Length: 241
Image 1 (cartoon, rainbow, N blue to C red):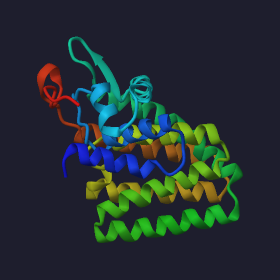
Image 2 (image 1 turned 60 degrees about the vertical axis):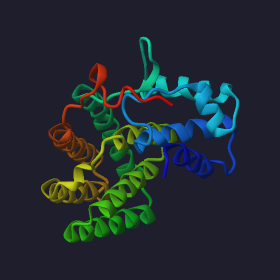
Image 3 (image 1 turned 180 degrees about the vertical axis):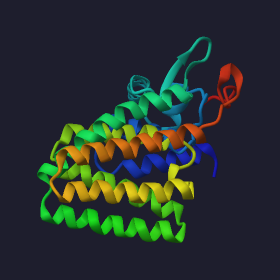
């Protein structure tokens, strides 16, 4: 499937309800997350508008929003390109996530309902089985569900929104840290420790367990994240869209 076709198909996924500007924003963001628009790729509002069947205004607004969120960056003589990810970016993203995940776990320990605790246990049982089978794709999906269940149990909508936004930044990395069998086993035990603290209503212990979990994920991510090459230090910088 061509890049144009993939972009158009993505747009259709988000067209059910929602304002046009939000549809264009989510389409471009998802295209970046999935590397349909890879690092260093040049975006041109006129071409994008024609491809997506909209005026240039919602495209420009979406690009401005994505640049503010770090998905795009301005490059002299090129304009807006998909931002590259450096080891420093990895550390910066995880530094924020470590703190926020700790707060979410702390609040979940205080506020989770019995039903939410049962869901977390069920998800972690599924995570254990996926880890045993070495099903990395399913494991990654379950891991996301587990953490989102904690965000909901925290009863803090703004915090949950911030953490979900950070997840999109993490999803730009090509491989999940859980693709490493060693990390998958380590993460499973960390989930058990985190869940035990939440069930025990140990807010301080839950916060510490969540922070430790993400600190270890960051160390694995930094080992996995190799240097990217290309014009100006970016991959694929000669392409444009």
